[in-house]
Every structure is written in structure tokens, then in C-alpha cells.
Image (cartoon, rainbow, N blue to C red; front, side, top):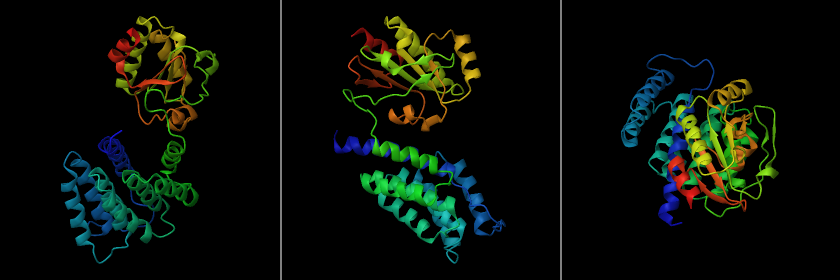
Length: 309
């Protein structure tokens, strides 16, 4: 892959991660003054403004943050000001400016008191994202390891665990990559889905959410294309992010699904989701008879074309 292509992929991941980090950002718990002129009160107003202007260019939103820092320059170590540093770092990630993002996260982590676990964890997670954007996987891995060691109870620790797994166990991403071993298990009907029976023939994995209509519709269309291509229903395995077998069984029966449908006991942290590098839904993975990746995220129309080849 070209340098520009790698940068593009890192940039897309950085933008998505920055958006998640921005959405997760909140003031640490505690008796913090909330008056409109206090840093905490001002940050609450700022966050509302940034959420409203989410579609605006990062540069414009950064200008609001810089105004906030100027107004509270006499209290640079206040928790609200440090939280704003993390927000600022996230916006720099959106702009693909790894150095600027790293500096904001570094300041937040360096100044945050030890008891501010959530804030420190978000700063470390941001440092990992900045390192990834810069192409430094070793440093990114170190930041994640420190987060899990020092702030294991933080809300973002689950994200860090998944990110660390992806760094240590790269998922198949290009045609010809060997598929990792899958656990599978029992489907919502109670029948055992054995990975061994998938060997030696093409199979399709589809990851979706019952409550995400686009991914649910794509599952149905992929299943239709799979059947139209002459492939058996049992060679398609669907994974739902939800962990409610009753709800999933009801869905399967109402739609007439004949393929195995598995629950997501740990959501995106399920071993098979991690092994396949699934970070969102819908995700589909077409595997050849040799156990190697044929394609990811084909969509119903392209899947139908592939199956005719």
C-alpha cells in the first residue's frame, strides 16, 4: 500500500476514534463549582456548543477551545481546563495533526491529579491515537498497556483492551490473508456451530445489530444474495452485537432465517469480533475454501458478482 493510502486509512481511524473520544468526554465526578463563570460551567456550555457545531470544520471548533483557554489561563490545572485539553487533542486528530494532538493529551495527562482516573485514561487513550496517526505502533501499544495497568477501571478501558488486541493480533484485511481461528458456539436455537464444519468450502460471516436498521437490512440482502448464488444457508454465520437470545430468536423466526445466528455476549470485545477486526456494523467477511480472506464489506450487489465468478 502507498504511503498516501496508509495515511488515509490511519486518518479515517483517527477521525472515528477522535469522534468517539469527544463523545465520551465528561467532567470527572466530584464537587466542582458549576457557576457559569467557573471553568466547569464554561466547559459545559462549550461542550454543548461543540456538539451543536459538530458539522463545522475542526479549525472553527478549535478556535472556541482557544477562547476558553484564554479566559481560564489563570487556572491551567483545573479539571475542566484539562478536560478541554483532551477535547482539543481530539479535534487535532480530526485534522490529522498528530504532533498537536499528542501535545494536548500529554499536558492533560501530566497535570491531571492521580484521583482523576477517567481524565487520565482519556488522555492516555488519546496519546495512543496520536501515536497510531504518526505510524508509531510501538508507542501506541505502550500507552494502551499503561492505561490498562494504571486505570483499569476507567470507562474507556474496554476500548483500550480492544485496541490493544487489534495491535497485537492484526485482523485479516486484504485478500489472501489467513483467517484466524474462530470460537463460534451455540446459536440462538441452541445448536452448536462448529468451526470445523466451515472448513473446505466458502463461507460468509456477517456482523450486525438488531437495533441498527441499515445493518439488519444488509444482513437480509446478503443472505438473499448468498442463497441465490447456490450456497447453503449453514455456510453463512451471522453475529449480533446484542446478547438477548429471545429477541434474536424472534427476529430469526419472523424473517425466516435458516442460517446460524449467534449472540454477542461481549459485544465488540467478543473473541470472534476481535479476531476479525470488527469495529462497527454492518461488517461482512467472505472466506474462501482455503480458509483465506476473499473480501471484506462487499455489500449485496458485489457479493452477488463475486459468487458468479
